Amino acid sequence: MLTFVSILLVIVSILLIAVVVLQSGRSAGLSGAISGGAEQLVGKQKARGLEAVLNKATVVLGVLFFVLTILVAFFM
Image (tube, rainbow, N blue to C red):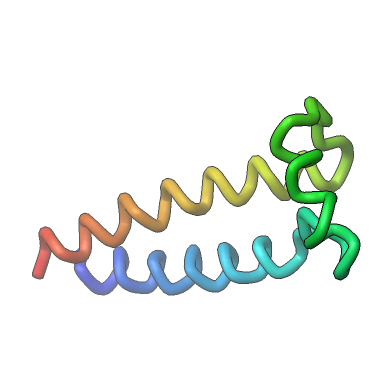
C-alpha cells in the first residue's frame, strides 16, 4: 500500500509541477511589477479557456498532493 501511494505521490507531484509551469504569470514583465499587480487583485477578471482548466487542475492536484503526503506519513 505504501509503495502504491508513494508512486501516486510522485506522479501527482510531476503533474503539479507541469501544470504550474504551463500557467501564464500574473504580471507581464517589468510594467506588471510596477502597476499591474494591484489590478489583478482588485479586478474581477475570470479565467477563460485553457487558463481556467489549468487553474482548476492546479487546485485538484494540490489537494491530491497534500492528501497523498499525509497518507504516506501515516503509513510510515
